[in-house]
Image 1 (cartoon, one colour):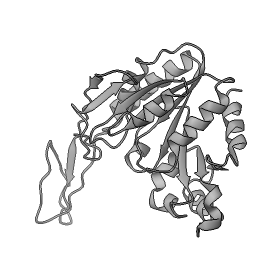
Image 2 (tube, helix red, strand yellow):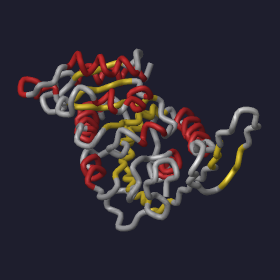
Image 3 (cartoon, helix red, strand yellow):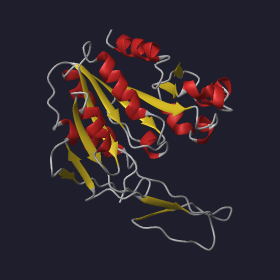
Length: 274
């Protein structure tokens, strides 16, 4: 189980490439220390109890403090980052809620730019090879991570997945995270940039509801602008919500379906190479 969010991960994660019957199974474990701080009467000295399990107290206040359960993840993320730099890979962590259009954005981007840039893709989903199969049709090196009941990728999964890719030329490593705006925000994968994708069908207040993800992102792509005439979506309101939690956040408005705004996205990618 993932001690950070409670999702099941150990013994459930598999990594495989399209066309392979069996995948590589990865075991990930996190541990935490619980610290209980009890309230005291005036004049009493505070004391702390360290336990490996939680207790319910009839009196006093209980504070649970995690002993940096992300420490191992962050260490491996730095190792990943060093590897990416050594291989001249620009790693992008693409995060969003389900249905925002991450895979469609990847498909079109790779199809349009594969003559200019080398792409490698890691796909993250709880189940199925569907997204990896879609990317595989573009002729791009891709590996699928299935997290089982897990709700996010972590740096160890990425480290294992990268071993399955035939990394040759420098280029872009596109990591499509599990569709979820909560837990993926906590896990550094070693990426160069984090790109959060939302769509006009999701509502303007997504950044307010899920602030940690938008705080940690470098770029916000707002997809499906071709549907704006049919929706009650206020673009400026959505940006205002996002700017409240991350004043430095950049925005790109586009439609993968119609192609509107894609050239701005491509320009942003090209600028990362310089």
